[in-house]
Length: 87
Image 1 (spheres, rainbow, N blue to C red):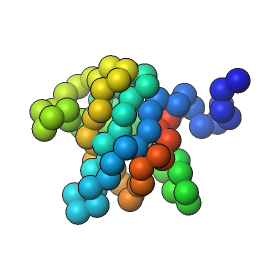
Image 2: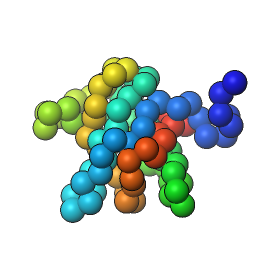
Image 3: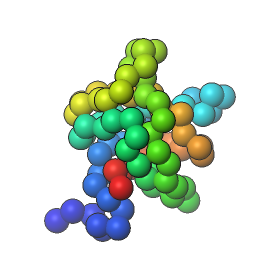
Image 4: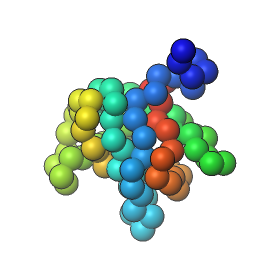
């Protein structure tokens, strides 16, 4: 049974966060593309944002597939293990 539908579809988790540059590395369990809306939840963090840009190995990409690890600028500090939903 999926987690609460209000969260959207679980598409990945944060595996690293670079606090100086506010970039999260997200391991994807589902595809993601520019323009998608995501929600990051964990600890006392719960925020939504639009995917404006993503990178793999410092190269800008428009879409990523299941299993990819993407770097993405985030609007709030996150931690390893936080869940990422597509909304």
